[in-house]
Length: 148
Image: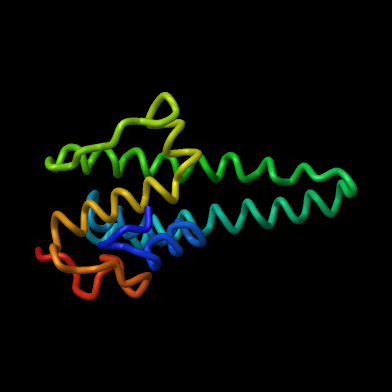
């Protein structure tokens, strides 16, 4: 998961704030310029899920059932990641790996950071050989944006 051309920065970003990597992938693979919108949607959904979790847990204390709001948030991420996988496969040259837990849906839902790293590493290597992931500084994820 943490191999070049992503390394530690890509793994940390994908694990701690997957909305950034998914937005960058959307910009790189699906729709140039659309990554900011996807990033905003995913950040909003994530924040709303956690706020609802805190409120519900505070109201229903000592029962801790607020985590249930994270499931719908996960399905929003799943929607965007499946679209990204589909677009990457259409672009050609993308060799998806063998699915570990039965199907793409299950694997993408439960292993989102690893799948996001895998696709980003592949995309950087294919479209910008010699570049490395530079974090969340821009929508391309690398120092320079993709050539037009």
